[in-house]
Amino acid sequence: MIMNRLIKIERKKQILARVPFSKATLHRYINLGKFPPSIPLGARSVGFLTHEVDAFIAALATGQNLEVLVEELIKERKHLVSDLLLQNKSIQSSGSSLASKEDKQ
Image 1 (spheres, helix red, strand yellow):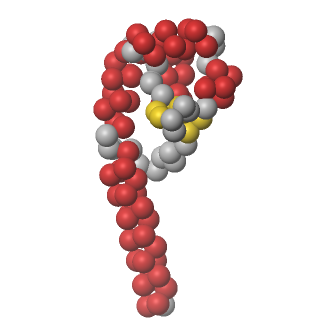
Image 2 (cartoon, helix red, strand yellow):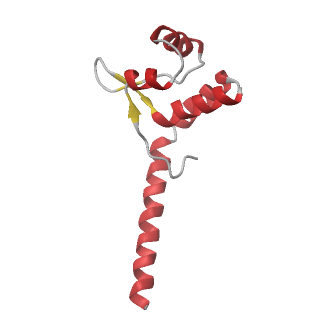
Image 3 (spheres, one colour):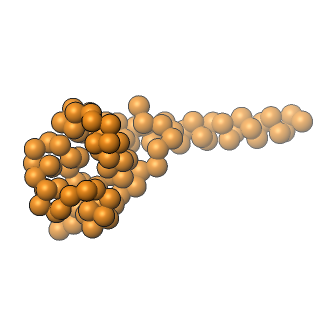
């Protein structure tokens, strides 16, 4: 479950500034399942989820299996919306419980 995570999107140019390889290598890693695939933003534009790129960089730095990481990240995508809704609901509940505590004082 993804909690307390902002969902941000970066464009390819931003990603290439963060990773230690070229555009061609980025595409090769994506095709090999070693880098999280992009998400469509429009008819001709794509972006990358920042938290997935962060996870890739951490895995690269610690010698983890990149293919396994990418598989897990792709599975997590299915839960992004539901986790975000749960997070927002939790924030709203804690906000209303704080308000009721203040009312009692």
